[in-house]
Amino acid sequence: MTADEIFENAALNWRDNKGVGTAFVPAPLNNKVLVYQILAKLYARSPTSTTVIIVNKFTTRSELIEFLTTTEDEDNNKEFKNLIDNKLIRIFTVDFILSCKWKSSATLCVWYTPETYIHGVAIYVAFCKYKLVVLNKLFTNNDDSTNLYKIAPLLDCFKQAEIDALRVSSPVEETLIDVVIPEDTEDYKLYQYYCKYIETSLNIFGSFDIMQQARIGNTVLNISSATICAQIAQENGWNEHLDMSFEYNRQIDELYNPNNLRDRATQTYEIIRNRTNLLADYEGKLEKVLELVKEHSGDKILIINKRGEFANKVTEFLNNNSETDICGNYHNKVDNIDAVDVYGRPIYFKSGAEKGKRKSMGARAQMSLNEDKFNLGMINCLSLSNAPDKSLCVEVDVVIITSPLCEDIESYLYRLSNVHIRNGKIKLFSIFCRNTIEHQRLFNKPMTETHTIVNKSEFNADDGNKFDFIIAD
View 1 (cartoon, one colour):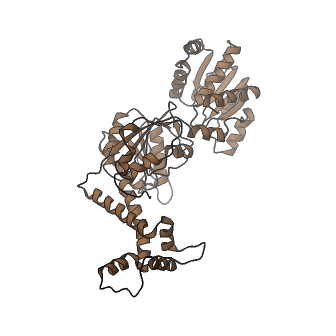
View 2 (spheres, rainbow, N blue to C red):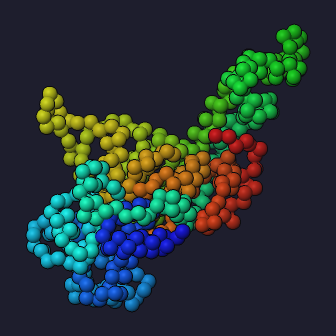
View 3 (cartoon, one colour):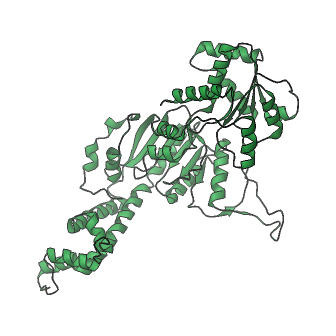
């Protein structure tokens, strides 16, 4: 089901409920569309109807007016401009309603994205004939929800399965950004060593499954790792009576001694982790991230990294190379800091034994602080780890993934159900180390019909096979 069909069904659901109801519109849907559709249907039938829309702040009022009057349909734009100019549609803030400066009822009252139940506003909403409450998140207080649903019951629309399917199928326009590890660097030599070690281990064990059994045993068949290693050793010509005066036998012992086999199996997994970290945290990517952020300085940007440690480096690098801080961490791999509010003012204990002492902020508090600063436009970048917190609730224009060893974008779209992609299309930039397992991973990832790579032809998939490395992470 398309977004248009979902909104059409929601409008019909509201109409069938006698024009009274609360609609919870989750991301990635634009809840302004529902307001637009219901207003369009109302004024098509009753051109002289009156509408009052109640918003939290004046900036939201401006955003709604812009949305209603700048669509692709010029006739509708003119109609909505006339309705607003002629005061048939009025948009007020909560503070204005609470000040009792407006007491006249309206044909339709829209309470747009309230964050909590406000009794004074609810009284006005209940006074109007038709009522629509649009939520972008459900109230956390059960009493608030109960009181709201008494005047505007929760509608049976925007089913989660439909939203999830729509979110995952959102159009993705991906641009690949390559970084080359110079061959004369220690990183390059270390990467080659890791690849060779892993390849040799696979030649010895035959598969990762057997390697795992050599490390921990076969739990299904109840065979110990020592027995597994002894079997592999015997199959490859090793025995405890080898004459070590021969070089060939010494090589056999080095590779297939049961004790060495178990050590190698354990060490190989450590080598795999080290290789993944080397690529995912390669500092040559930082300049590319900075270039992209500068190119999209007016956009809201999520930067997703394989590990929190590199996410910290991204934040530090961006802030150190900008006139003001533009990026905040949104992950749990951060040290505690002295507590501050969104304006940087210190926060102290106001009572108790620690009165007057500076509060401390842990990872969760820092995430909440940076989310608020992002939503307020005080920073335009958030740096995340590979498993971002599901509660993140922001609007985004651009996503940068700093390693193909992260999850694919569709997985993040499914996980981050409160993240709204502005303009409907996801502008994705994927940074990778060329001629490495990251290069191969890019071309092995499954693609949906709505996911396009705009510059794929610039990167030959065969380039990623320049070396005989094994993909394992």
